[in-house]
Image (cartoon, rainbow, N blue to C red):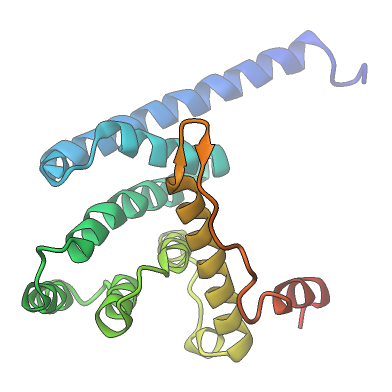
Length: 204
């Protein structure tokens, strides 16, 4: 290790770390401005939850060139919560939900993945699909476009469904933790779970 374990590499590592920290700090300031300009606090979104979302994105994608991915990750993850809260609360009537879906659909022509996620609420009344929405938005902002042929493939849809269910159950598990007390939930593997490792290992 004498080729890399020296003061030159140590100083280079410090400079690289400081550069990344400065970039992340600038991104966080921009996200806080977006938070304030959008009045997200009025919808029950705290800066703490926003910071947590950005920290999670930064811990996963820390490279300087991943700025778009980090911002997409943090903002998407942040916006999911108030929309879910509005659609899931008891005092939101069916007519209000339909009006929300209608207004959202007409607000922009570039919200395809969000619309697909919302349609699951309208048609099925389920709150799964967050993982798919997050990954799709990240890929879009990173410039990775997935063809309709792949999206409609049976194996892709199966993998997407399993991923959504796993993430949903993990979120449910996390939400049921109260202090040192953990409420048990069903972790029985739904239909298709045994297909996941075979698909990943065999690449078929």
